[in-house]
Length: 521
Ligand SMILES: NC(=O)C1=CN([C@@H]2O[C@H](COP(=O)(O)OP(=O)(O)OC[C@H]3O[C@@H](n4cnc5c(N)ncnc54)[C@H](O)[C@@H]3O)[C@@H](O)[C@H]2O)[C@@H](O)CC1
Ligand SMILES: [K+]
Image (cartoon, rainbow, N blue to C red; front, side, top):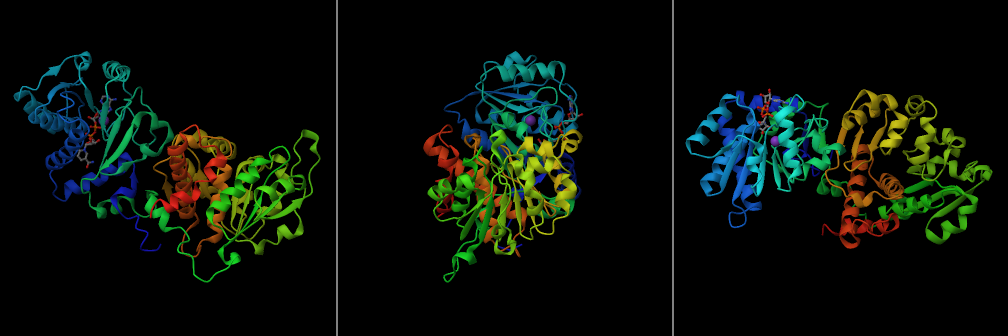
């Protein structure tokens, strides 16, 4: 990988609870005192809280204290805030705790920081700090603990969770019994997997990583080569773009993308895919679509070469592609192919041929549903060139029903599916996940404004256009797929700032694709 694309910093790594514990142990073994690390981390959290809620605005702070080191962090934060002049009140539902946590509790009592015996004692607070459980949470919350979490979620008091909202599984983001719905979560040291699982998003609130100086060597030693999961940041994604363009070039040198899409029933998907490709900057776009769509496509995408295809009978109102013209199947003419949007299940007539193409292939929408009806593993594994699948969770389930039953973890699911099919997979969601060729990427930011029909068609075209014009010798398909996912998500964010979360229809989205690139300069 090109050196300027530095993803080797702490902010990029994503770990499981087990890996985090192992990394922490290496630091302790090397001599870092546990208590010193807790002081350092909690000092940084205290600063953040004071920035968010200065004493001039807020004075009463409630602190929930758990039995482990998450509770220890909370007690150090409570002490520091108390010493700064805040009115702090503790709630500690479990009397037994780890030694260091107990020591901090004893000291807090010696300072006369008040303790409430019931959660209701915190109901008058202006902010609540959740230090019940961190990555050591192993069992479901029940009894008083679950009741306390329920009470806090019911009040409208802002909650700040330390490390992660108590009650969430650190890896899968599942709610174990009951979980805090935080307004802010300060994730400590390294991103945990839960932050990139869609189901945990309603609990996390705004998230921030508190970097307290974990040595990179310890992270790498624990993760090894195989278990690395990284976030694709905007700056890294930008570094993967085919820029600057060479001064002397021509359209076919800037990539030629073939889009195979559309039907009479779903005529618009092919336009949106074409507009997504246009936004990618790709040199040339060819489109194979049913003949009745031709004049419409020429109107919307005058720059594209339209190859009209014989249509299937519209018995079910489908009017899909019956046959691809010979010209379309001269695969060597193309640098990438996108197949799927709006094809209907008539895709079965052409898909076997397209799978044989010796060109990078992006498979989306109805092409995925068609593959799901046959034997996906065999169909995909037999391909010689790069294959990228872009399912949303419904399509993923149709393709890999067994995996969905076997694992609750969206990241693991994507990784296994990629290994089994020897493809790169983009599992689309509020936090999209990409796995391919041994790499795993997660996309840290997006917007619900993108939850609109056609949004995926735009992404397929954008991704196809990017793959077609990129230096594939040096940039992996997984990196490019993650780049397209960041580009798409950030475009949604930019467009929603102008049009609101309700105003980013798929066409509007295409009009903002270049803004993300320009926004960096
Ligand atoms: N990783 C690091 O380098 C650092 C970690 N720190 C803190 O340490 C935390 C992890 O500490 P711990 O490993 O002590 O884990 P936790 O503080 O998350 O809690 C573990 C304790 O809770 C108990 N427990 C788990 N589930 C329970 C349930 N449902 N009901 C009742 N008890 C339950 C366990 O038996 C254990 O005693 C992190 O989240 C973070 O806040 C920081 O202090 C400093 C740096
Ligand atoms: K917590």
